Image 1 (cartoon, rainbow, N blue to C red):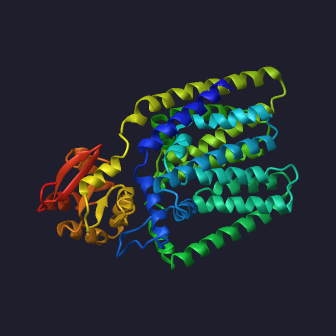
Image 2: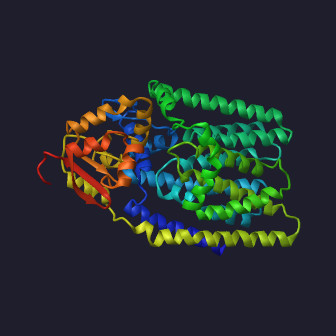
Image 3: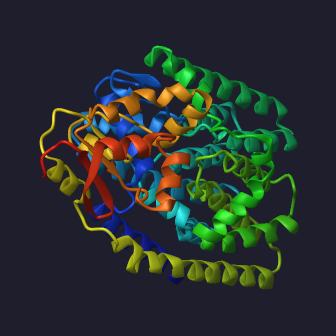
Length: 475
């Protein structure tokens, strides 16, 4: 309880710090916000290229639709995203608690384990940065909690199907949740219920996709066809497990502690047919495939953390002898305390590395301009009252590999100084690392050459590199 209290306190302090200075409002979070701002203005999935610039994103809509609703209700732009992320994390921990209680875990252990899930950096990232991963995971876990009844009824199956459909509408890859529930029902002797769940979830997903097609006037089909795989190939799929482990070591070391405990439970299971085992194995397999897709990152480890803590808690609750259970509880508490170390480092140093209002300072530097602002982080033009010219610079580069002429309007705009300013923040374009980044990751071939020919670096504001047209007067 003390270890979990510490983790919750650290999470609350990090949220207060990072929400005030927008520390983790990076380009991926900016894409979610830009999609919500587009929808608020009546555009649902802008085309890959159109009058407003470049679209193209593989994000599914539930999170940014809810964000757009909050914006319509008058909630401030960034606050709406933070509130949604916080609600998703609360929903996630509550769902994990309910699932563990349904599977027979004592109330105190279920509550502590649900709180211990916050010890992972990937779970805290869902709290600190506006994006849809936490919402998709929460709905997935709630779907499992509803379906995990000893004798499921048609009402439970219908509600679980709705939750799994909503999870899919928040994040395309959450299908492993309904897969685990389906297998568990079949192995538990409820094949009829399993087929009903599969059919109802499939119908729900088809209804969501139909609504997306209608609302986007068919644009979403072309966008998903072009962007959903991210350029994934068989070799990358084969290396997915290693990539997943490498990301955990580099970015989320606390997760490795809980993963080790879950693997311990997996090798000494009470039953290989249990729902937590099926969910854990399905999550590992799905996450390794997801991380084999270029452009995915360690935020995908969120699902692995939740599946790990749930499996270990249920395994502990099933231990008949008191000594193994007491040792397991001590191991869980120790893992939680050790995982707090990188979190405290983040709180003390990395969370405070940027000053508040950094985007506003760049907007003030640019001043009033009738031209669009081209930026690596689409949240900046949204805050300036514009529609971003590029939603996802990484996806723009990917699409150029298939259609080299796709980036020509951007390059032409740079040559003609059609942008009032260009703002980069991922890398310093003057460095060798930056040159490689913008050639191979964001914006793509020819971007830096066109930028350096027609624009000049005017200022660096809190790590944001602001370029003005070369013929413009000094600012």
